[in-house]
Length: 67
Image (cartoon, rainbow, N blue to C red):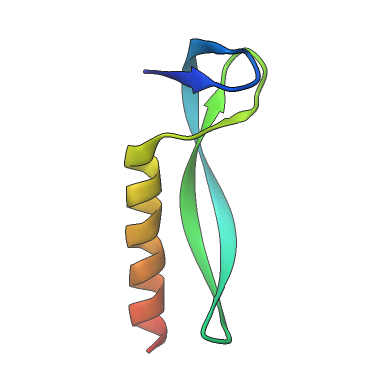
């Protein structure tokens, strides 16, 4: 899998790591598992739109479970 790394200024191979993240929505703190793309060259985080979409779905599920 390749994505654009802003630090390396190149298309690079990346790994997907899982992180616990928190988000405040309407005064409620939600915890969810997010998948993050990490550059294999410099270890910086990459923006991958598909992962963002999956993370938003995970956040939505966490919100619905809270309600």
